Length: 183
Image (cartoon, rainbow, N blue to C red; front, top):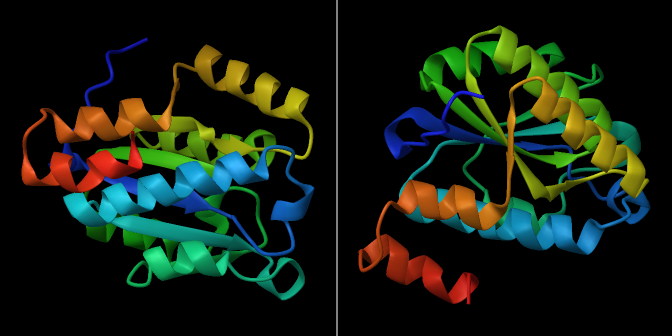
């Protein structure tokens, strides 16, 4: 696996399908939401661009209100395909943002997260999946997808690793602003 070197100037966050009617079915939904909140706070403090997708919002509802509040400026792309690339305007947004690395989190790990991560990798992006901010209806599906991602040379890391790698050092105003969420 090539070394993971996340840099704020080259990274964007992608939150996938954390929606009202889908989350009650996700086995570790409370953890996914809590870690996603930490990632959204980090994106805001460090000025990391964020993109949000929603799978068939007519049937599955919108992004959870608590997360939408933290990400009010982020563009939201509706989709019916499992890869985020299927959403109208998604690929153009990535081109516009001009980032080399994409940090993904959301649901379901074995469907939309996996499909999107594989496609981003094929398109030449460095891809990191935040394992503790992802989930599936069955824990076993999440575990198998995480193993498949690793086998495909895609890093699966915890929230704290991603955020601290982007912070680079302690003592900065950003570190101090985020520290209460990581104690």
